[in-house]
Length: 567
Image (cartoon, rainbow, N blue to C red; front, side):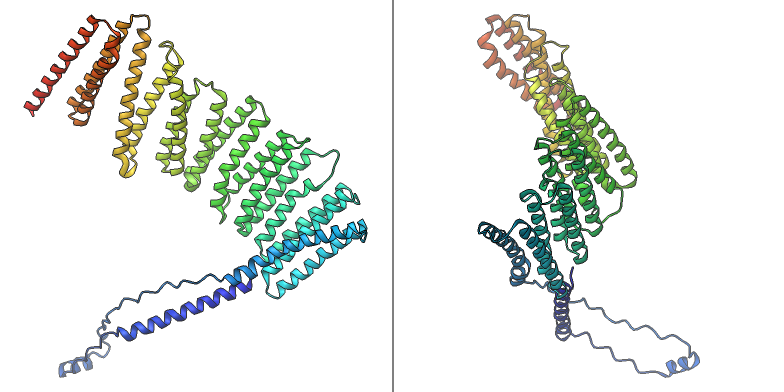
């Protein structure tokens, strides 16, 4: 923060303190404290005692305490004149000035007034004038105007160098690159001298664009990736040291953008670009082991950096190489998570998230479409369990996302039908039911706040419905070679047995909700027989179904009467 801003904040603070002092004086006048009680007249005994014991400590006087007056919250109005005239006016019109200079050059060139050498020389001279005027405005306590002038000088220097190299071919690529690096370093020095984040952002953007402003017949992919990666690491460390959050996010975003543009080029090497993204991931990971005031921002960018790295590795390398990279990432971040679990709990959710998604990417790339849902179901449940154990909301969300994806893909697999009992679909069914039961156990043990009961009801009803569908699918698979009458009879029989089992369980546990669910299943079976079975079965099967249902319904009713009489 510059001296001018400090003076303004100090003046505002003095005004606030004066108002608070006036409020304190007013409260004392309107609420005076109680008058002190008159001192009792001294007696002879007290005099004698005091004379006999001159070192005696007098009794303490209790003064009633009064509550301090409430302080009014002083709302400061936005100084639009300062915001427009001092903040945005120099920035906008510096851009306008640069456009005007470009057009002026164009007009002078069209009229033959300036040679190519004169144009370049004028560009460097005007850039130097901007630097001189910028520091002069800085000494005059006009920091925003100084930043605009110094930032404009960096842009003008780079444009002039680009013209000398690309348009007029007055200098070669090595000299142009060297000059651009000097301008980037100059911008970083400006930022350090003025304590300005905006100048550092301009310098970082200029540094990223430098290789794109060169004209080379044989560009080196290794040099490009190494330069961009080193530039990111340098500006990232500078941002962390100076607590420039905007610069930190800008430098992070510019590297993937530069590598993407590089990959689109004719000479782009996607494998080297992937290694550049990996270097960014490693650099960010290294910084979270250090103590810094921007730690929250470093942790937030760790996950997007991993996502970019995974995408680049998927594009650039073979499936085997991608799988090896994801497994190594999963193991590495799992070990780091274990270490953070003992040393730094606040960093644990982010590393666990990366380990979970690395395993997700590996499984999605390695397993077939039929086997993938089963693996993801188990992973999602384990990720959710870890979230409850470490008490991390982020890890819980990751577990829910992975399980939801697995659940959707599992539904797509099981709806295709079961070819045989010993099949992948059967395995997916078993894993789906087992993991859903595991989710119920997790929620029952850890709870989800005030919504625990509702969540358990939804999960249990969902599990009951899926188990009914599973029984139906297994029954149809086993009776595939039977006649239509036998198939309908077997499915209805299984439904009735399922309803009886639920009712019996409810009677044993003495849970009314379970008993009602069993009765609902029984009536659902009756509806199935009426609307689905009757039109397709023979008269004899119809008689068997209705006799069986009627007998079971009456028998169950008898059990309920016995229960009510015993209770």
